[in-house]
Image (cartoon, rainbow, N blue to C red):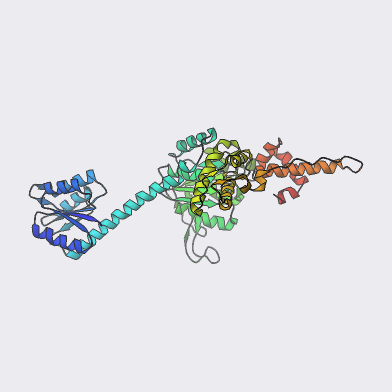
Length: 456
């Protein structure tokens, strides 16, 4: 029940307001002086104070100052029978929600009090949501104790206060969007929108209208104006995932938006100013795409003012037990299972595996294991076969008159190419590095064995 304190030296006024507000479902306290109001405020938590200006032992505005200093979340409404417009302005400046002139209509009191409490609820909800944003997308969601993760945490904290563009690189499943959200949550832009978009998920035409919006009649079925993501993210952060998938024409428009901080809707002529911090991500190195003439060099440098690399899970194996426990607790709670831990034997298997799908793959494996496990600990047999026995020993080679060395070497090449691309999650630059090849050598082998990419 909401508690309201009425402060007025007229007993009839106090009684009338008390009866009115109790009928509205409020708990009511009353005070006839500034001293009595102080005693009531010291003894009770109050949601709203309704105070007269003229009191026998002082000024009601002093109560307003006291409340705003001691409990700023408490709403104060000032009322008077002798006030002027200047008094109302002064009360507002001190933090009063409203200023009522006596005599007033009881319906007016009801409306003002309901509006005041609704405004307080909205403010409290905003505070709660901001806290949840920080808790949900802050560094606590980037789990790890390894040196690689400590360096990542330090980098996120360092770049968050700035407005510079950030390019996050890393394999699929390493948490690039979590890093972007953490940067936003720790930045001065946290109260503004965080808008996430995958550039590789749609066609070039749709990508342009998604990013920049369109005017009515810009194309078939464009019946009304649509704001683009740049406008929707105004004041906040725009996260562009898979930015390397954008076409050359789209790259020109994206570069212009970053340079001029202006956009133009499709089919429109008006220049619209936007204040957006752009964080982009890619699992294919953009410098490699620049060398291959598939990505603009000027846009690459514009996006990569601050580069951040998310480490793959195989480079931070000491984080695997912590991540496994985190996912286990989450899924056990969601499923209502009594699975409490990952057994030591299963944990050893998880630590040996190379994790080509990174943290996302580990999350899926733990979810599956929790769903299948009937006991209190995840056992090795609940893990997928490919994780328990990721690579079988090669069968003995039968040499003889029918042996084909060229075919045998071809099979070895294909197997190693598939293994490298799998562990690199399709990142050709990374796969080439793992095989000790230069990118052009890898491209030659993939052309030589065209079925490799189709089967990965």
